[in-house]
Image (cartoon, rainbow, N blue to C red):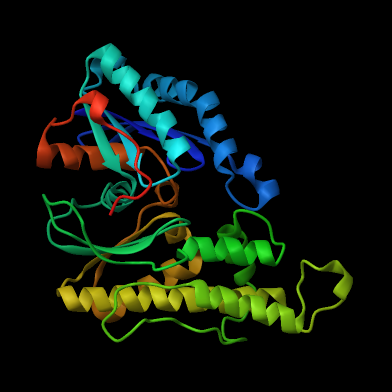
Length: 340
């Protein structure tokens, strides 16, 4: 089955053609980083407008580069949530129009399930239960994933997502956007043990997350010792590289320990880590170390499939189709800001 995927949940306009859920025939992504960088974060109205400008060109390019025609496409898949409503509506409108005009079935896809299936595009298919950490700018959650079944939520963030905490700290320190990438780069030359920041575990058996406390701790730190974003304060009494490395280590500690707890509680040895923050160098190192300690089979997507893309949406749509077939009326598909 050949599926045309469309993704527009936040600030990436993306389309891809994927065969049988695993063979990537094309992938196109139009980034909006330059649009949102001056603001230190995504501006929803600007994101929606850029999606409108880019969506048709991106879809057309994906189909052309796939070697297919629209007649060859068996189904259209589109992200319906969670995400920014205005951005989602652009992709959904395009998907509906194509599905209706070409008389193709439409498969609505959960963006987070898309991230999950990005981990299984390469290597062996998912053949036994797995615990999956989805960690990105808007989401931090743990899922139990079984072959042939919809992912089951085990725990989620109660406030900030991990990626959101990275971006907010980077903005506070005047480091630029996207914050996670800048912090990851600076941390390579920093001491992760230089400063201690709190790790919130929310109780012995909790699989939920909270990152608002560590963000507040960084705010209090720079109030006391100076902020590199404030050029008038002169020389700082600490290295910015040490500060961000220590902050990053605290976030990674929580993510690794919570995922380990979920793996132990569910009795599984297959673990996947996906989402934009899964591209973080230190996170990948720590999970690789833990996998060796625990004997896990660890699945990490390639860096190109960590951030938002349409390959993962088409791949997830194939799994949804295997579970449910084509069971949606085109005009009943709509955008949702929150979805498990």
